[in-house]
Length: 231
Image (cartoon, rainbow, N blue to C red; front, side):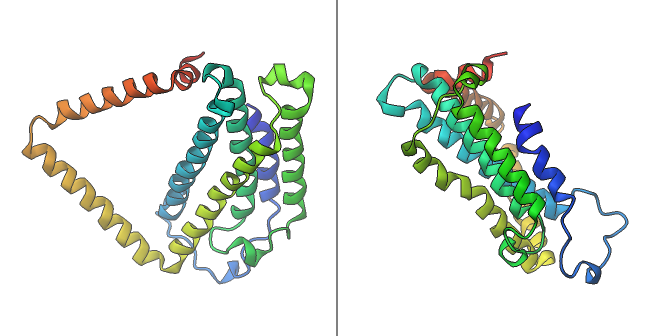
């Protein structure tokens, strides 16, 4: 709820004040049958999901092993690191979301004053949750030191860097990029389907692998399993 209302709410409203791409009137109209979530947007969603999830889980794992203490004793500390990483990386990511075609450096990082104010206000709210003592027990957070911020800061930039790289790749040659991706995905599924048809025992093996992965996940990280299993 905090992420949806505070972290995403203000920057999303600020995006509505964006002027648009410099050559927006020169761009051809979208095809009438093109879906709202086209391939360009879909690849952005997929890559951002992977990037933000990865940095959040890395921060959580680092927090679990803080000071060499037991995993359960560091659970709230790890949740705080994951919360700060997820919230702040999304705030930085908002600057790159201002355009699907132009890099943020060309638009001007701080050229939208409403975005600047929205991100600043949201960041202050996140820091209040972490550092105001009477809010810690409400949100189950713990204050982070400079040592933790040194680990978090590089992680915060990864989703934005990924977004800019994907933006450059997809706009470099949209048709060629979409064709290459389609062929790669189609080829991967063809190989997988052939392996299943050739080996009739593949389906039980796949189920067995899934069970083993889940069992290993619970065994190695009981605190993580606890987080997912709580109401």
